[in-house]
Image (cartoon, rainbow, N blue to C red; front, side, top):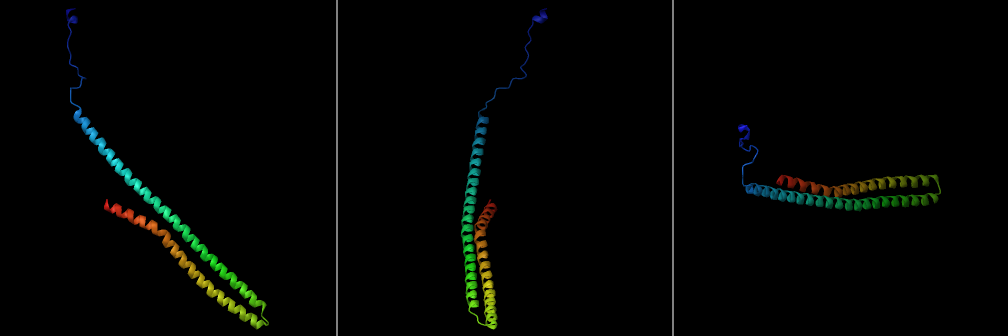
Length: 153
């Protein structure tokens, strides 16, 4: 029994040695501050990119509206010219006296309509080309700016 009464002291195997945690706290604080600064910088870059994209979309939409109106006005003008030419031809046809005169008026009308159709097609093609270039300009500029910023980074 004497052996059982003896108390043996064992080393605390699970105890952590006493150490100063201040350097770790400083390193963690520095890491957190750097991470916050990088996150803020990334957010600012993303925000400016989104704002630029929004401006590009707004500009494109305004341009699309203006160019659409321009194309519509060109189409209306062509229809007006065709209608006026048709009524003018009808008036001339009502005044003809002979079949030969009717053929001459009809031939002149067809020639004039063909020339007018060619001119109108060229005008619509030019207006469409201008509209396409105007619509693609903001997107092209934004793409070039983005590529330049990627190359700079």
